[in-house]
Length: 446
Image (cartoon, rainbow, N blue to C red; front, side, top):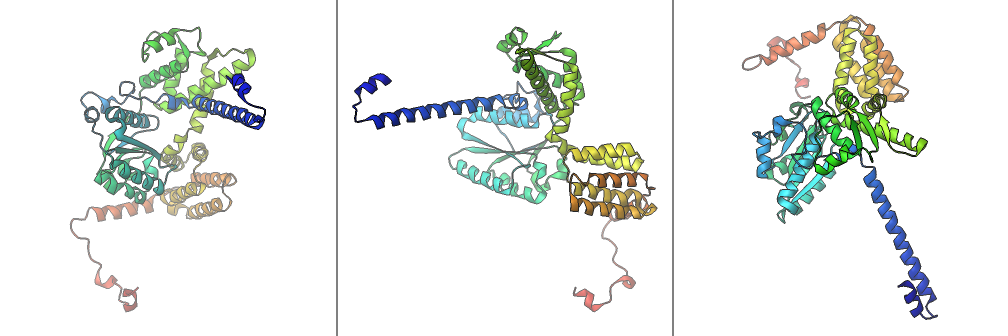
């Protein structure tokens, strides 16, 4: 066709011909680049995202809220999705459950449902206002909007007020996920307008099943497996076929990974993906063959990286702060330094770490060593002036000082006793005695 078109052109049209060929060549090159980018994007999707379930049947765990006679299962069967909060530890399936609900809503109501995904870690009030505007525009055409807010506890209680009028009027349905106790981290007014569902830590068998499905998805082979639960017949044939598998892993290694991840499916999947990528790339460089064997040592190394690099490590910072506090209280220097290093590895603000040390110096040491408070305050100002990583030794020095200092909780206990008297007072609180009142006329107007 191109040569026939060239013959029909006259000699007066060489410029047009060149422009046409160059233009078509550029379009063809651009289309190839777009296709290659799309392939790269799909190829580099994390394994955690690839394993997101899209239906209730493919969701693993949490039978206490998704069982046959539970409230949530009845609501999902009817297609009625209220505003709700999912509370549970990291990697237990909160985001996956929200994704299942979104997919189910789209299957039931089609284009009449619009889903907006946000995270409080990267979104602000402006993003929520934009979502409200979109929801109001969609509602004019009979389209319902579901706003999924991950890590909703990252919003302070004043920021959470923006959800109140829109949740109450039904502008959108809010689905929030949090690792913090909603009774403390969420606004009580917002909490009263949402149903709270508690998700438990995944069991070892749940994580094992998730890992087996992930290995099948990655075209791997599990050796010494007698019972397996493939998703469908096609994947069953694929999983048992070892001829074209990219890697193999034994059953004991999977069992060890399921135990050590402590119910966190995200850590387990990240560790598996890191081990497979590292081993298959090394195998490809050496022999040109991608068929590799994942050993227990490979999984152990990848688990260390998955735990340190996991973004959810910061969501458990309150537990690490508690461990640091208890270690200092017990006078354990090595344990205190370990938890201090863990907190710093989670990229916590050094000034916030120092503030906790200031609190410990007064609560647990107090009058036994009044200088401890000054040391902690100076450490906080030092961290504020020089920042990380230089201030790490300041935090370590202050931690050791507090560990070695004598302990006294007399001030803390006395203050708590006074608060208890106030809380347990029946009726009105006693008035200030006459001889203790302020008699200055100037003070009354201050």
